[in-house]
Amino acid sequence: MGFRLSHLSLAVSLVALALAGVAIYRNTYEAVIMNNGSSDFDLLETGAVSILTLNNEKRNSDKDNLSQQLSQESCVFSAVKGVVDSAIDNETRMGASLIRLHFHDCFVDGCDGGILLDDINGTFTGEQTSPPNNNSVRGFEVIAQAKQSVIDTCPNISVSCADILAIAARDSLAKLGGQTYTVALGRSDGTTANFTGALTQLPAPSDNLTVQIQKFSDKNFTVREMVALAGAHTVGFARCSTVCTSGNVNPAAQLQCNCSATLTDSDLQQLDTTPTMFDKVYYDNLNSNQGIMFSDQVLTGDATTAGFVTDYSNDVSVFLGDFAAAMIKMGDLPPSAGAQLEIRDVCSRVNPTSVASM
Image (tube, rainbow, N blue to C red; front, side):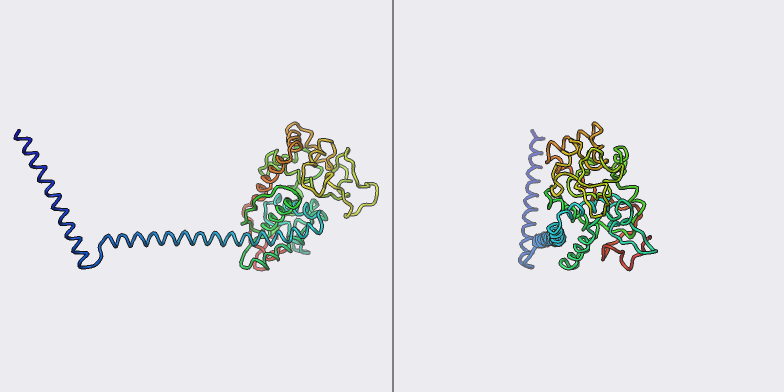
């Protein structure tokens, strides 16, 4: 019994001490308030408000920077689109040419704008005169106009010629009826080009299926992505001088070209029966053995690739989606390791301050 009373007495003493401590704290706090008109709590509160204000200012700054970036990118996209739309309105075929120009740039040492560099007599031979491109790739003047439009309408924005190629291809696809997709900016331009690389890396109309698969695999594309990208031939034309060359053409194709006549570079063969519309007719033609190029028709000669051809022929939405996804992947092909890079002021030549490896 005595033990319990001693414990109770100890507990009462502790409570009393606690109450006394509270009273002392309260008196001290009130004294501080009376003497200084503020308290440590005010200081803590002020500090918290300052931190909150800084955080809000940072968030607002981040939003402003993002808004400015989006506004700048919107300006670039609008400037390029205006030029591309006008060029295609003037000549529908130009849309297919701009898609092809982007492809031929990226497939040779990555998306570096190398194909845009003009030859310099006695000094530099670029990709434009390499056999796959010579008197064939076109649209250089449209890219030059788009670059100038960006310079004129979007001051203080640095955009590469490789970026403009990517935007122009996307806008051409959309203009011709294809599925649009997002183009990320940030590519750089190379200071040189690769004549031999254009000859060896680009798919050729005479390539058999094994060679095509290897060339696309070298760029990390699957066989399905290869068949999807081949669908770019659902728009545009080939030169008759190309399809009339033995080994380049599907022998069963019903050609419009008169291959026995004297040919010029202006003589053209449409690549499918609706050459100005981005649709699935290319695959329909393959299934009817009417692909124009040898490299096109061989896609039906293997069970795997033939299955993809049938998929795209049966459902245009599947083709359009796969094509857009493959174009995004292609547009992300990086320049060769160690390449000297810049943002060119003029797409057809390196900047004066650059040291080109020519």
